[in-house]
Length: 267
Image 1 (cartoon, rainbow, N blue to C red):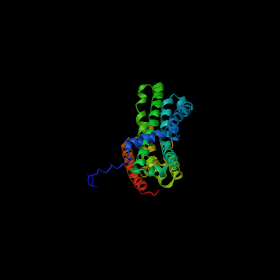
Image 2: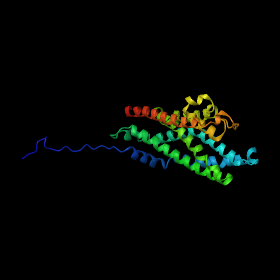
Image 3: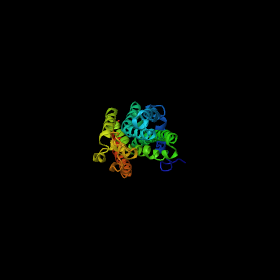
Image 4: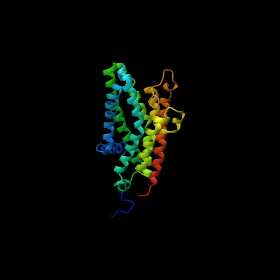
C-alpha cells in the first residue's frame, strides 16, 4: 500500500528565529573586544583622576571643599560626554558589522530585532560604565566627606545615563540609515549644545542636551560650569523625571522608525 500526498507528514519549516534576549547576548559578546568596551571602562577613570587633581588645586578645593568641586565637575563632564559617547557607541558597533550585514540580514527573522538588540546591548554597556563611575565617585566621597557624601552619587550618574538613551537611539538609527559619520556629527553637536543651552528653555526640544539638563540641578552648576546660587530655580529636581520619560518615549519612537527602515531595506 502506498502513501498518498495527503497521508505524508510534511517536514517542519526550519527557521532561525532567536529571541531578543539571545540577540542582546550575542551583541554584548561582540562588544567585549571592541572600542565601546574600552570607552566604557576608560571614561570613568578619565573623569575621576584628572578632575580630582583639578578639584584639589582649585580655589574652592584649597579652601577645603575638594569633594564638592570634585563631585560637581565630574557630573558636569559626565553629562557633556553622554552625546559623544552615544555617537561613538552607535558608529563603532554599526561599522564593525558592515562587512557581514548582507549575510546577517539574509537570515529568516525580522531584521529590526538586530537593531533593537544592538540598542539594548549598548544601553547595558553604558550602564556598566555608569555603575563603575558611581562606585568610584562614591568611594571618593566616603573618603573625603564621610558616608553621607555618597548618597547623591547614584542619581547624579544614572539619571544622565537614562537621559542619554534617546541620543543613543538617534545615533544608532542615523548610523544605520546614513552611515557612521553623521552619527558622530550628532555627538559633537550634542556636546556643544549641552554646554550652552542645557539650562535654557530650549532643552525641551534638543534630545542631545537632556543628560546635561539632568546634571544641572544634581551638580548645582549651570551648563557652563558656573555654580548655582541658593534659591536658583535651576536647582529644582522637577525636570529629572521629565528627562527620563522623554528619553524613553523618544527612544521607542526612534527605534520604531529605524525598525521600519531596516525591515524594508534592500540588500
